[in-house]
Amino acid sequence: MYNYNHLYYFYVTAKAGGVTSASTHLRISQPSLSSQLKVLEQSLDLKLFQKAGRTIELTNSGTEVFGYCRQMFEFSEKMNELISKRVPSSTRKICIGVSEHIDRSFVAEVVSSFLKKYDSEKRPKVSVISATQTQLLEKLKFKEFDAVVSDAGMIDSNFYDLDKSEIPVVLTCSKNWKAPSTLKDWANPEMFNQIVENDEVQWIMPSPKFKFRGDIDKFFENNKVKKKIAFESDAMGSLVHAVTDDLGMAFFPLLYVNQFIKEKTLQLLGPKDGYWKYHVSLTCHNQNKDDQLIQQFSQSFKEICSRDILEC
Image 1: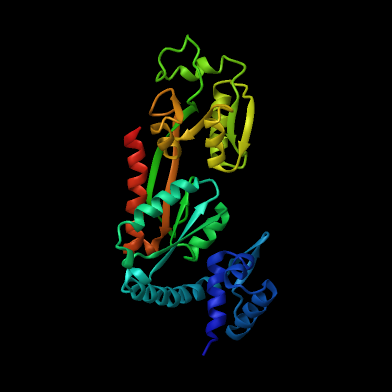
Image 2: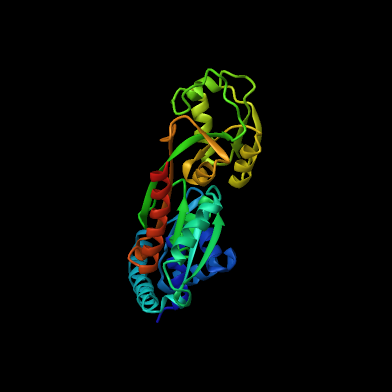
């Protein structure tokens, strides 16, 4: 009989695409994992991996062995999923991975909407964990996350998009901002061009590491705007606060500021359908797409996204 642990280590390493990622998932050292893989190769009298530049790839023999391992371990995973689906929702726990670039108040609203669909004694437990895009990909691949919220998309044949929403990106200012007398129609798309003619306009911007910042920079570049940045941050909440405090103007996905606009703590400048679209997605592993709890969470995600679009 082959060593079950060795086969599982090989399966995870092949699935992860390398020893470094696999050792992190397995919570063992890289030298220890490499050693156990060599023991497996010796017991099979086969070479399972070969170098491919700075990475490794499966040999023909490795590909054949991986096929058998995948059938074995995926069958085990499906059995665990079937059993977990029969467990009462009150004892279930789902873990949601969230990109660093996503506004936390939006995620909290989705979670709240999801939990309110259950009576208090039947509510599942929800855990929300922030992570980089690389970490999201890795943890979703190994189903350490039940679903992932991202603005960059999760492209992988193992993943399934539960929802992809396009959100208008709108221009905002504080309620105290006084428009020049020449600006008559605040909903006019040309509002932006008239505003940037004023050299005194200052901007509130997300951190350069944000994908959304790149979208804003591209918009400014296309419109040949020399922006004067008053404040930038990697926390969306602090950016909103800076605008309400009249420190400058800012572009935001409507999803993140709709409530502030309704409460009139922020003013909307330009068209309600925005200047471009911001994309936010909810993704799960293919094997989880039919899970009832994941489907219910997806429904809450869609409701919050569509509600804010309709209210614009």
